[in-house]
Image (tube, rainbow, N blue to C red; front, side, top):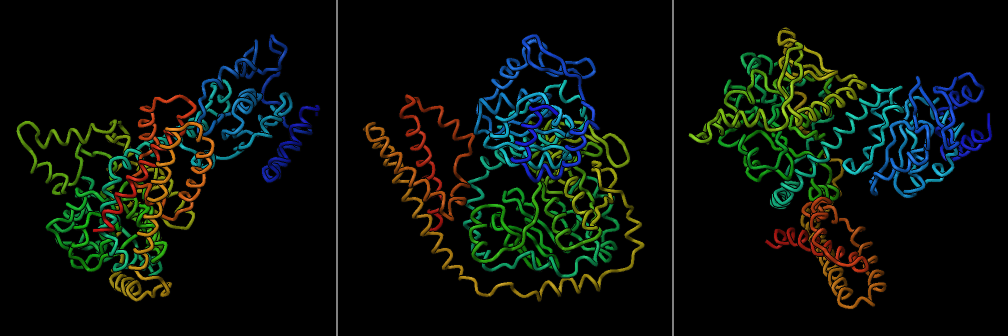
Length: 604
């Protein structure tokens, strides 16, 4: 091999020793000449090396370096740069020179192409880059998981069609996964901006329930592996299951999402579990004027306060998704983590999985609109639509808005028939696809009882008759609940709720003091620019104390998102010398506001 190869492969092995061992056979095969070059090497007009594949140039035939510079110049300090393949590597080399501290990720399913590039271009600048990752020979799921460590909306992707054509389906799938992550991040940001204050208010009002209610983890090791679990969602297809629900309950554990409770009670069946984890008042309405004395309600500490007045057998908490709940659980004890895929049905499914269920059945989880219906007849969504119906906004208008409100598109149900769905539901389906695949490795299988639902890879159709022909499991269910009831606490040496509340109050007061001090220093620097260097040092010390605070995440709940901060900072028209001070003042001011939002509930 040539000197460029020797230099590159030596640097590669030094920088990535573990990856080098994994790829050792491929390296040896390429080095010995057993692996042929995947493309043709030619000389560009300016004398640089370039390549052709099937007659198509991978780089400019005139000036590959200049072409790479033009490509990289599109980037503007992204959270990371991701190259989907890279030909001989002109793009990554140029990017590493221009952005030495921005994370750089190179994705290539065919390792021979990376080694071919090592033979013709000097990659030293890439190997010395502060944050470089080679995702070589990995599947799309692994590559996507690597990219989730960066802010999805700020990643700069480089995908030249001629360089990715050798693995087009691979890169198309990876693009889809990355696009879903961007959609998820966008949804999360929108949700935080819209509901952050609601989550704070509910969490603070419900804090005492963290001390009073037991955790859902009581059921995780109670023998659930001996029982099938059925997740009841409120899709229109649930209607087909209702006539047999009473008999099905004798043979399985019924886990009902909040939206489907009304339908269950309509046929005289109280589910074993009801799951409600959304803090919105509209979700609390699903329980309004209802009761289910034999059911266990699974909720979380940020739920609408009226939820805790629901008449049922027992209320248990899952671990909170929100920072204030996490702060208290860290000290009082975890309630039990449940997955959150954006839909209460994902949480219900994960509960069944955490209980050890070998067979999990879905019913009414349509993730689409079979028959152009949005929800099962009699659900709160439908009833609310009828209650609020008027001449200028009929219930039909409301249904149409639901059908068309989130980029509708056509997909297939489990029978292969067309089904109208939308972008939001596609994200939920993707969550299930990944979760079900992971569960299969633990011999936990998911089936659907409603084939008119959106088809999700990995989920098979089972008929209701399969369940009805199974023997009764009532004794096993009784033993399951008894074992959960008598499960002992893992740690009896926890602090009292009052002491944790006092600690939280003191910590928030300390944070408030730091924010005020930081803002005051910024104002002094603005008034006297000669003090900026000295004050910047003091601000750094304040920032370190804030970042080390246990309560900083709680304060972040109602702190502006990056998008909101960017919008606020646009109003700052200061010269570059003092702009950082103005930005710091903005951040300290917003931090003060968020802490005071908590303090009003602590005082009251």
